[in-house]
Image (cartoon, rainbow, N blue to C red; front, side, top):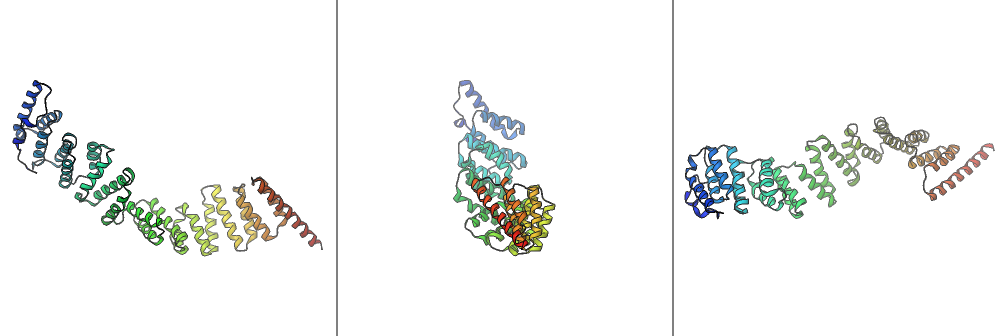
Length: 387
């Protein structure tokens, strides 16, 4: 940037039309004082430039700001303030978006302005907080001039948000995320985007690879656990790899209760019955609510029933019903256990207790038929026993 103050460009030609003869004389006097600008103090220069700004003498103000920015004695903070002022002159005063972009690029490259300042001072204050089209053009222009990787990533992430949520340019989102991954391979937002793409295309193995990176490199502990859980679910339900799911979930179940139901299904798929029963008993003791404890008891009862331990299963189902007496599923499971052990008298009582649970008239009719059949079974059983 030229350090020589070019006074030939600051003559009367660039004075805006005055409202009166008196104002004209004042403006001529104001512009004439520019010749003393290099010898003025910083404060005096600011007073003169503010006066030029208020009278819309933007050409003169442009030259003075450029001259002052280029002075070697100017501090970083002073240069930054002058650059923001110069950008405002070009965008608002001279109404030249192209020259505004040129100044923005120069300032970002020269001063490595942090993205927070770009966002607040340039995008929000100069361009306007809702002027997303100009935000887009600005970010595209300056992003390659940001040397710090973290700052460049912030700018690119903002560019994605504008394309996707504000201007609905969805076709431009993918290339930006690929650009982010080139400079920040572990970037969470870009990896999530890639994962969603693979899930949408049912590319489960590729989605798993993205989740592995997220599970390993996400800083927030809760988010990392969520990614691990999602990875385990993908292994269990989409890749049919319950062993891989179990390996991920085993160390998580105590600290992250939301993973427990997936872990239970992995045990069931692998038919690890004893380990399943042990885990369920542990989960019952550390459950977060009576309803959750009832669910774990019910699943433990089903596990016992599958193992042929119907007597124990019936006991567990009764315990579950004490916590969740309106659960039709638990009632049905208890009926199955009672049938298995031949407890016909208890079966009839249990079926009749379902009247308090069943709501539909059709179901009540079916239940009445079951109760009647159970009574006939009892009668046959009693007759056979007497013989």
